[in-house]
Image (cartoon, rainbow, N blue to C red; front, top):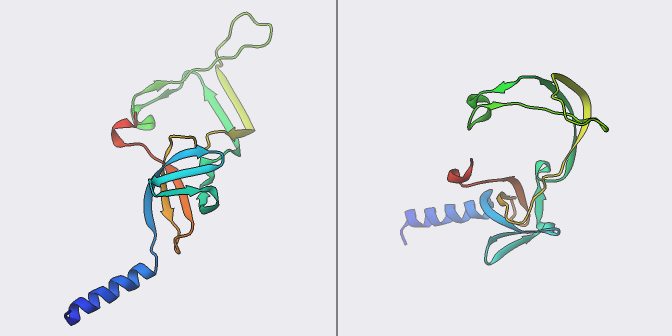
Length: 145
């Protein structure tokens, strides 16, 4: 082995020993308790996972403003222009009526969209390799719309 090869081998060993972050993809195979399959030989259970809050059931305080008609262009939404709509039906009313102007300030919103079986997720191996951070769901490029 030449001196150059020895230096390269030593440098690579030192780099790998520092355990830099690795990005992996996996699939949720159980939601409660959480289990994510990275590959057949690596199934991660909840004690090894750190999950971003937006992938869990969580609460937010929001304000909603609606003015009829509201149009959202393709540039705002991403796939096609959309016309917003709204309706309300009070108990005892025979038909629903559209909102013309509506504002709700400081409403509590519970986001129920936690990880589900079949979700494909992006994972980052935390330095040291014992924990994995689940950062987001993902879809293949041809399946986004």
